[in-house]
Amino acid sequence: RSARTARWSAADLVLLDELAGLIERPAGYEHIVVDEAQDLSPMECRAIARRSPFGSLTVLGDLAQGTTPWAARSWPELLRHLGKRDAGVTALTTGFRLPAAVAELTNRLLPRLDVEVPLSRSLRRDGEAAVTRAGDLGAATVAAVREALGQEGSVAVIAADSRTAALGEALAAAGVPASGPDTPGARVTVVPASAAKGLEYDHVVVVEPAAVVRAEERGLHRLYVVLTRAVSRLHIVHHEPLPDPLLAGPLLRGSSLTAGLRSTDESAV
Image 1 (cartoon, rainbow, N blue to C red):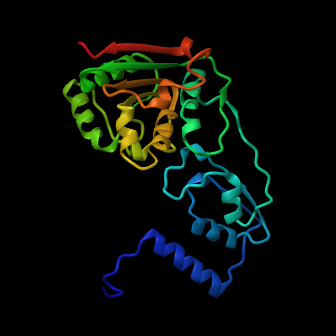
Image 2: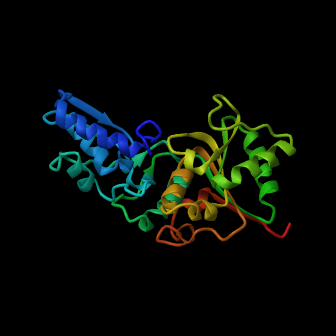
Image 3: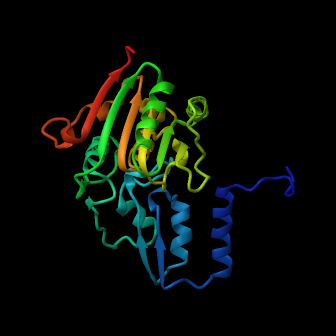
């Protein structure tokens, strides 16, 4: 291919940035703030490090939400690539964005993610996590959305990318208008799992978690992202067996999760 017909990729851009940095030696910044740092590649870290050779960095991220093949497994690993190997790391283990029932459910995934992330604790005792096993996923999803619409706030249906079109059609056929994630202010949104990172909704209906896990190499990480989008209420709708981490682990017994977890079986309906 000629230079005119070749298509540049994100990987090419990082290499060109490396070359430009070696040639031009641009001035750095006194302080840089980096968000979603868990998905940075080593070369992207180098690009940031070149812009702060003597300055300071504030690096924010959640290793459990690392969904790229090159996502870091530990903060020392990432900080080494950023040229700040001696930087301090502070783990935020207590929060208020997620209700306790949702936080304790997502904690079950952490031991299986192969990352150094402590269990989280929520200060909120409100909210709810519900699980419905259904024979007809479309009908069960419509029912879950209608239940959520009975309360205030935004509603999202999140599923594996390959399933969102069918779910949108099921909602439309039932007279429930739904938009995509790029439509601001929509009451009901259908979101592909791959696009869920960074989004938040009051009520989240997660459809067939097993399909989310199957869809990509770091599928459990993607499921963690999906489950943590719920600010008030999480409703899991499934037909296939749930991924093992959601069914087992030290949090399954003796946990306050049972007070906020509602489970129903509609598979025979």
